[in-house]
Amino acid sequence: MAGLNVSLCFFLATFALCQAARRAAKALLPGGAYAHFAREAAGTAQLGACCLEMRMLVELGPWAGGFGPDLLLTLVFLLLLVHGATLDGASANPTVSLQRFLLAEASLLGTLLELAAQALGVQAAGALTRLYWAWGLSDLHVLQSLMDPHCSSALRTAVPHGALLEGSCAFLLHLALLRLQGSRAVHRVPAVALLLTAAAGTAGPLTSAFLNPALAASVTFRCSGHSVLEYIQVYWLGPVTGMLLAVLLYHGRLPRLFQRNLLYSQKSKYRVPRGRPVPGPGGSQTPEEGSRGRGPR
Image (cartoon, rainbow, N blue to C red; front, side):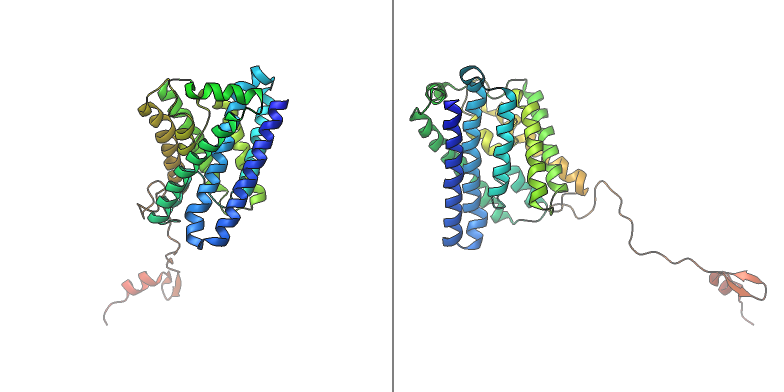
């Protein structure tokens, strides 16, 4: 269990370092620069570093450390809980940033800044995590440091099947985010963490269930086994397609692009009054019938 203890220390140090970076950036930078850049960079670096370390535990832990799947999934769930509680509103995911843009909740400039910050964050996470592995603080880290230059692909199924899995899981994730939007964090964070843990348990053995184009590009695009184009189909086009379908299903349209509802008919909120019968010499008549019955005298 020494390797697991070293990894737990890494997780705690990553959370502490990124939290300190967030607080410093919030105190020193203007609100827009913090919200669209610094917060996203720190959040994505935190998520990327923990993802790399967790992937090492998943690949090497069962045979080098004796870790069972129940322990690993429990650790994934706990990490996701801490991420949700500490990200301070950052998406740390390009498809979530694109979703906000399509919902007209973010400007084009803000979205581009977020995407640039996410790319910077995952690069920083990769460099720092591999430096930590090189220290060789445990047998697992020594093995990972030796194997890292010759990493194996996270995609262990056919490309269409992988794209379908990533797209389906991303569809469920974004549908949940839309449904839970505006809800309290104490309810939203555990629900999203549970959903992502379930995705990791089901799709993880086949695609690693990244559901995040930035993470996938940092972790597995440089690994042998598939071409960059195949990785893009699975880990970029799959999640983006899932996000678009979730927004269309939930809202019936893409608010940034279409004003008219494309899927659901909208009923008018104004009711047209019906004619009421009014008494007359010849019996009950509607106002329209009465006016038609009157002629020039």
